[in-house]
Image (cartoon, rainbow, N blue to C red; front, side, top):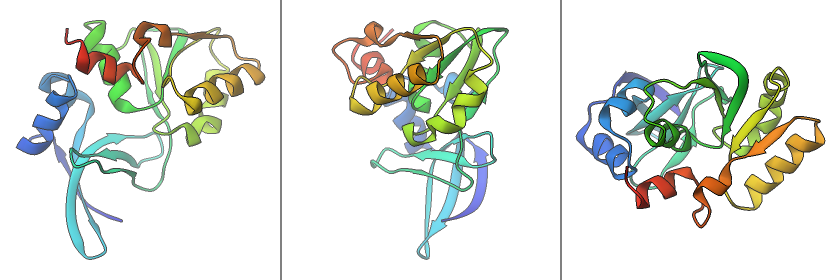
Length: 177
C-alpha cells in the first residue's frame, strides 16, 4: 500500500459513511482525514485516523479495514490527565464524543486501532491511576481487559454502557442521540 494524498474529509461517499455510523460531519472532520492510496496498481480512498507513529487506521463504507505503515496507537490528549480512556477503534472514540456531547475529550484517550496494538499502549497507560475501557464486548475485548489487569493496571470496564451491543458505535448507531 502506497499513500498518495491526505486531504480534509470532503468526499460525499466518506461523509455519508461517517454519518451512517452516527458521527456528525463536524466531529468527523476534526479527527478524520480523506486518505488516498494505491494498492496493486489501483487507486483507492478511505477515512484515515492518524496514529502516533505517523500512519493511519483506514476504513471505508465498502467494508475495507486496514492500516498504513507504520502502525500504532492514537493518543488524543484531554484537559484532565488524571485518568485515561481506552478505545478499540476510532469509531468507538468518536461515538463517545457524540454520546457525551463533547468536541474534545475531557480525559486523555488512547485508541488501539486494533487489539493487536495493546502491548504498544500499556507503557502509556501505566502513567494513569485508572483506565476506563470502552472495548468491544467480544472475545478480543475481554482478552484485552484480562491482559490489562495482568499488567497491574487499575481498569474500569465501561462496556456495560452498551450492553447488548458489540461496541460503542453499534450502540450509538442503533440509539441515535
